[in-house]
Length: 280
Image (cartoon, rainbow, N blue to C red; front, side, top):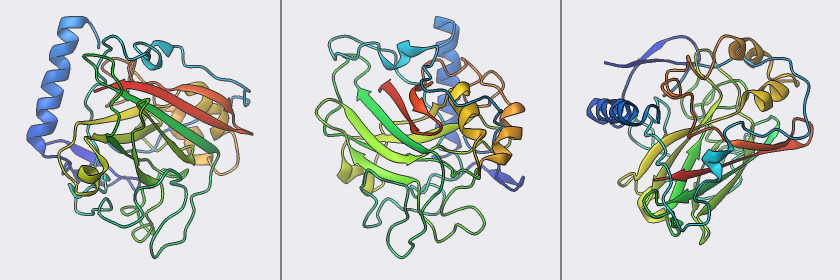
């Protein structure tokens, strides 16, 4: 049975969508790798000390630009585990049925909590398309979540049990895109900087914790991560990022995250935008 490590270093049994789902995902993904030659969660990463840059672009921009016009097929994004902190009801806590979860700005908590996550601003733009046709998955929904700058997850980590920031649901627009306003996540031990997401057929299905179309993760490029982690508040991320690579990450390692690396624009001082087109 897969075991995960939380932000305190304790081992956690996998309780995501079930062992059968995760084993099936692993087998299918490795089979795909065998055919095509290459093409969750949680242990905080290490960042570096690179100076902030005004513009950072992922070296694998094809992952966010191919079939963007919706008139041809594109590579399906790999299935990944949602990890032990999904908040979707599969591991105890369910935030999806809470009033206020459907929102674009996920920096603040909603409901009884008023806590806001601090950190470098990050706009997340996902374009969701049918992998077979390239058509926009308009009318669908995306549930997105990630850790805070300390590498901790709302609803689960010590002291954050009553906090629900950095989680939200958005309806996919006619052009296939959803946009979230957030903060750059920290890097915790053992994991590359990442963002989790689930795709649903529509908002109603998402808030009812219904069938998931796709569960996967976004990888954040090293250059932007290093620039952000050199700023105040991300001290532990510097050490954690220095001890991990995309190749050694237990989620992105099989193919280096080639179909999951976001394209970045912006800077650590002004804030970044992470964009990715995904096929489902």
